[in-house]
Length: 353
Image (cartoon, rainbow, N blue to C red; front, top):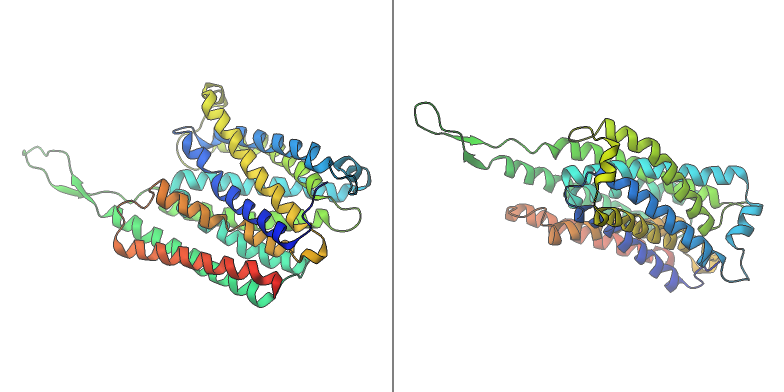
């Protein structure tokens, strides 16, 4: 299998992860009114298909390294179970994230959920494998945590501003009308709560991946992503039915609705899963690079979760999710983006110090 053998190559892989993990959710946006519960079935299938392709290509090249089949022959069953469990935990977290996106938007759900996951995941991964300068690493994580708080406050303020918009009320019996205040958007509290729960779970899946790869009978990165994808796909069959019948927002959905989707909607769902899987494969490979590369799982995970910055940029500048915001909100968003950049820079140079 192919692994990076220089720090530059490993860093580029983590940047690829950041771009993929921060961009895949655009495919859901492009499906229009297609419910996320139905979208997710295609997402899970696309992820698994990409994991299989990665295993039979990059995971089977380079005869000087073990192939995926060789790795399966020596890997412990408990390690395989951890790989599957990581996929299940991620899947529940990601379904909650997609639900939060459908309620609150990309520029809100991603920074809160993935940002919180970043803090939890980096701390846990550093305890498992202490690589990188802890001062730079945790200073960067702390700054990113501040960015998350700023983003949440900006969202709260923007929601209040929208709630104060005055719109005409229906004509009264006397022939007069009076203004009324629009209700606060329903997604305010729900979006925040779901994003937070998603973040806690999202910060827990990566350490499970690292445990599955640890020791001589552990999983290689391409084997890990394959089992991970199987875990995602199988758990979707259960979690998907739950969210169809007990949706976070809107009315329950009949599974028959999946077959009423257009070809474009199905292809976009599979593309979203494939994009996420490409990022995950790059991330797992970077974290498994030789020791002299100096990229540990904590740094690799932190850089990958820089997807929060990418997704926020998509939400703000492409999808116009804060369109019409006051100068105060825009200033807070600018501060949030700047803090993310500073935090990610510190994390990226942590292995070099």
